[in-house]
Image (cartoon, rainbow, N blue to C red; front, side, top):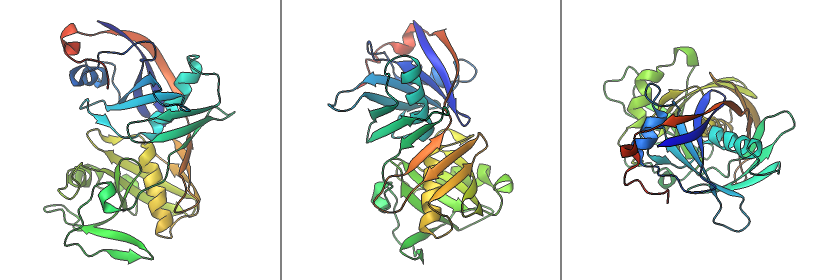
Length: 299
């Protein structure tokens, strides 16, 4: 089978975008993994599938699949920006503001005159059950009304580690480090990602505070490993930094893939993320029919 695709990137986080607005696509885990494979497929951190909305007052629906595992995931901020650029550039909408539903929330996306895209990422959730995170037996260090949790990592060079935990529609653990370039991301990232206290695993952010308005960040993502940028990870890191008194309400986040600007007025309000979204190339790929056999259409 031949499948048309668009390759996009947002701050170095890369995506294969598929248009399923005209007809459903036979997307099963094996086919999605092939698309995400950097040797045998197109290669991407995530696969984004654009669909027609099923809800009045919402413009589109889109689904997000991990490029390595083929599993559906809840949220991707860099992907949301690429989604907005895709539907506008492909003529699927002529609006500068787009409302979209994902598997677990609705987003509002705004295309800016300078080509960047602002995403209303929704409110962060702080209850351990929202991730989910199991704090049983742990004694948190409180900074105001916010908790830093000590996580034991047997055999690690640094244990326990103190993390802030929160959800941006997907689970995040944020760890402050002195210098991101020398941070043990490759060692601690997988140990935290798969830790038993995170029942659905967790994205791990390594945060270096430069000033009250600027940080550097590396993120070890679930199933993907370290990526050049993570939009929800940038939001989670800034929100944690604000709650802990380290940061002001608007922060420039310097990732290895580019600059993201995160704004959060405080509890009870949405996080807004602004950053780039670019098309890399378009094409077609020939895929074995067996990969689509029995896959059915996305639900």
